[in-house]
Image 1: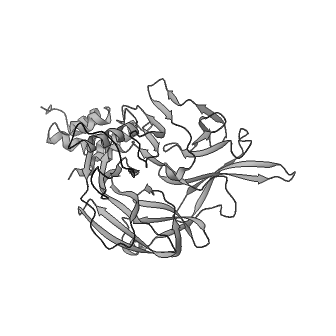
Image 2 (image 1 turned 120 degrees about the horizontal axis):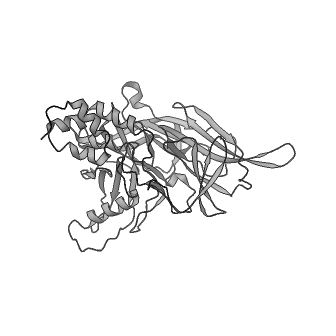
Image 3 (image 1 turned 45 degrees about the horizontal axis):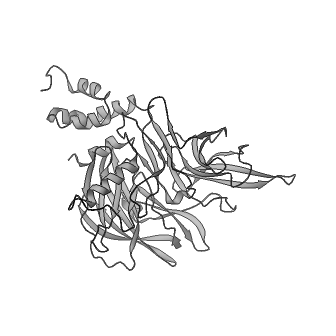
Length: 411
């Protein structure tokens, strides 16, 4: 029984020192503890106390028929934030459990098209076709930190002209609490169009619905990769007429006139030929773009520039850095992978020469090399599975916000 001499503020101060999983389990003790755990005061204390800790994150490629899920890059083992093992191992065990629900001895295999995408608050969307389930896909929204999982109702038979693909997960947050989420499926198109057709599941209504948006520019094609989720918006990569590469986005929680507007954002360097396919990642709540370009100097020599941009507004890119690292001697030496989700100054790349993971400060250009499995003195692990350079095939999972994700179904 709770000590009646301690106020809720004092209990919040005590609980804020504990690991995330312990805090979330504490709400089951009694109503008063539940009130403390769900309070804004405790959330602010917890985030403030652990703002300098190193939470878990993963860069994952998962759209195949393999039995095992492996991250391209994974950082895990932080007890405070609650993800002690890699996200890939969590997804693998999740799929194994779901596929064996009816038969515990059934061999685990996938018939392809397993999809895992992420929101920016630690929730993930997993979809796949169950054995003997025909072409119907099953969708789950899960929190790897708390192991909460919600199975969505089956897709309705709506009159869409073409099959849906490119799964996305958008969330609405208020005062640090995830109030709702939307699962978004966009229709694949194969020719010029100004109309974007979506299937949307809302956690607020518990229903699927369809929606059509009008694009201000003609979209020629979408690149076949899942969108980036950020602040209630989803960002896709595609081409407009003339095959100019753009980012197109939509705010799924917009109201008023904004609710009908799809934004088209050209890349900031379209006049130049990049060394790698254009792609986006996220860091510290912003959409980021990075690439390497070759520039010819006045003496005829070629210099390779590593450039990073941040999307400052819905249509304006801000150049963050432009450096010439001495170690990049040819255009194929390094392939950019991602920017650290919690440190916008740190970029990760694949070193083809050394066949390992490399990191650099985007302002100073100093490079460091990492082992495939690197453990720090505090027990955290940075792992690298190797070989991927097409960031559009990759998605970043952030566990730092798993706590607010836990409060999704508090009402």
